[in-house]
Amino acid sequence: MTKKSSRMAECLQLGDSTPYQPIQGLQDIKTLADLKQDNVRDILRASTGDCDLVVDSMGELEDMSGLNDAFNSSICSLKVTASFSQQSSSGEDSSELSEKVTKTFDFVIKSPPKASFIRLMHKITKPFYNEVTWYLDLSRQLESLTDYDEMEFKVSSLVPACYHAYSNYYAGEASNTCEACPIFCWLPIRKSEQGILVLENVNMRGFKMFNKMKILPLEHVLLVMKNLAHFHGQWLKWRWAAEAGKLKPGAWSLERWKNTLNTQKRVPKFIYKQLLSGSRKIVDKILKSEGGEEENIAKCRTFFNGEANRQLDILMGVRKGKIDTCCHGDFWSNNILFSYDEEGKVAETVLVDFQLLSFGHPAYDVIYVMYLSLDLEFRDAHMDTCLKQYWDILNSYITDNKPFDLEYGWEDFQEDFKTFKKIGFVLASTVLPNVLSDTQVEAGGLMALRDLQRKQALELEDGTKDTTKEIKRRIVGIVHELAREELI
Image 1 (spheres, rainbow, N blue to C red):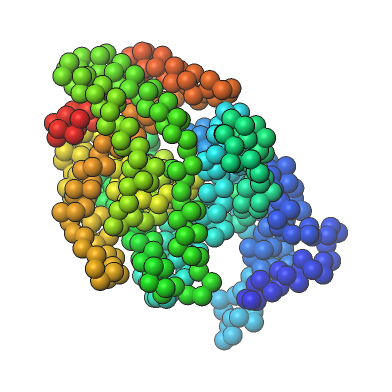
Image 2: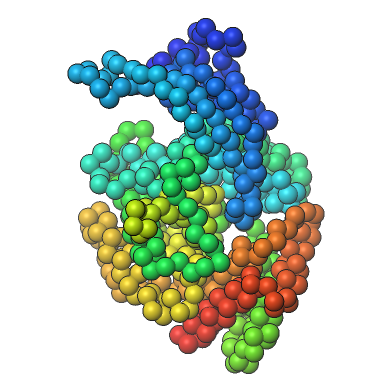
């Protein structure tokens, strides 16, 4: 136990001289309603290791949902100023010295969404549980690699600091004894997910969200490809070390890791089919309104009536790949924040929203950003450059860590990437009309998914809106690209 954790344990066990007593444990902070000043104080004491920390001031929770599509979470911000002791960097033995500091902490607070239909679906998919698991357990598994301390690149540098995380699904407080029954039987019985995530607001470190209506510039995409390759590569290294029994004691089993990343498999296939049906109608409507060629309209109809359903098997993890790894699962520009140097050049990235984590081919994440945050003109001009940037780094992990009998090269990756372009079409036609929309829909009731799709279709009929124009432009570009390459 470190000095920081030892001091915190003493605080929680023995109390202190402050007028209020510490809570029984941080696990008692379960919802937004629990973010009282006393509890925030204990979260910060656990983080700083100072059991004498005092909260000087605490602001009000401010809604941030409008800054993102906020489909899987409710998001707000909180500002807290606290005084505490921290180790001094001066003196011969700095470990024995401390200095009193006052610091303002800016938090992003996430909790499960409020919309009734989304909460119902989350009983199956459990995205908030995924993110809590990421911060509490999964992100730390990379430390099980024997040479983790010597690695130059750390995935932890890509994610916000987490101060507190709780989910009643993670804690086993919403267990369901009826899962063997049909979904319509046990869904109403099972408790909705409750929880809270207290994260660092990386905006305070200069990280900004890129305008989702604009196409990411090349230098941004090259940095994204570099960091994404490290993310995939380190988890691929972990997977192969687990298969070879070379992880440090206490590491997760490979089975537990894969089961944690089974997000896509949790979704009932009828939900995917409903989404595909809506996407087929939207693409058909867009192509007709934009004067699309009859040949391409016919190809898209054939695709959605046949090939798109076969792509579900890949999306749901039925197909196994040689380099399957941990994927972010929702890898587009709104979940990638950028910082800039003094000259205004992009310097670093931070990844957020680990709610759709999945186990599968890394091309899934690459395709996701390529077809949701870029357009045909960018892909025609820079696709090869971006893929080579990604592959060169990922291949270094493959070459250094692969099993002796595995053969996988650049040509194999290109072939897999070509296959995943079809999934990119399905994703873009399903997701873009929602995430690029400038209106948020309060989904509720059993017909909510169909109502949401109707709302999207009606919105696309307004050709004067910039959002509508951009949605149509990007989807038409994907259709032209895949038709040109005879993938549809």
